[in-house]
Length: 240
Ligand SMILES: NC(=O)c1ccc[n+]([C@@H]2O[C@H](COP(=O)([O-])OP(=O)(O)OC[C@H]3O[C@@H](n4cnc5c(N)ncnc54)[C@H](OP(=O)(O)O)[C@@H]3O)[C@@H](O)[C@H]2O)c1
Image 1 (cartoon, rainbow, N blue to C red):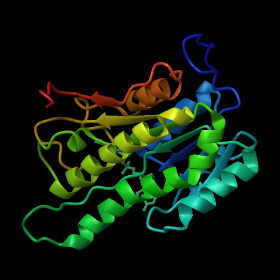
Image 2: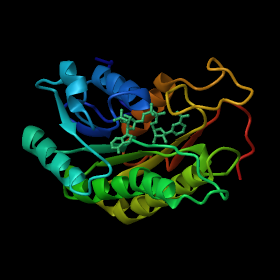
Image 3: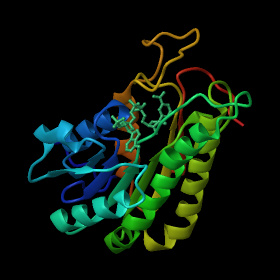
Image 4: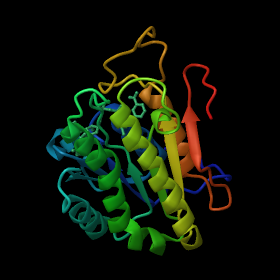
């Protein structure tokens, strides 16, 4: 458990939902938030893979972004266990090759479903509880590819630009309810989702633990110190 920081919200008793918690950046966030002392509701397609984390302070629940009923069921189970929900971290995401060549829109549809529509549905489902908390937090793990296009899947960039739009709209609409929304937008991070590193090596790129550290920081900022977007670069990037 971390030493209390007077400049940040006290994690004690705060309940955080985290999607895609079983591996990659999500697993690093789960580990970090557990160390910080939060109560966790971890969503994954195969929650049994996280069984050793389940207990009094941690719910492991099914969450499948392709199932429109899944967000409400997970939110309801979280509230049933803890009686409150203080934060939602939309982390689950996919990337598939999609550009202007084959135009296989099924790939684009899948990315929009997981990277945009499921986060939207989770926000809607969690909203009454986040409003009731008075200091609700939403963190959307988007991407630098959702701020400017540089390389890789155009469809992924399209879905992440939209996810940044979701963040921006939610931030404006729910500010008055004490909800603060942040888009954490990394460049390449050393996880399974990265298949083409170009000239970079795995050692050059950002670690999941560093992204988790950033997420932990924005999650704990008080209502009067909100950050809208956090771009994370491993290389110099002249963002627009
Ligand atoms: N790594 C990077 O370079 C990078 C850069 C910028 C942004 N991001 C974003 O960071 C987030 C986490 O990515 P990562 O790097 O940790 O990738 P990852 O290692 O591939 O993990 C992706 C996570 O999303 C989950 N997921 C995928 N499809 C899902 C579905 N239909 N329903 C529920 N969960 C689903 C996966 O669960 P399963 O194990 O069940 O597949 C897994 O937990 C994503 O939003 C990604 O776009 C990553």
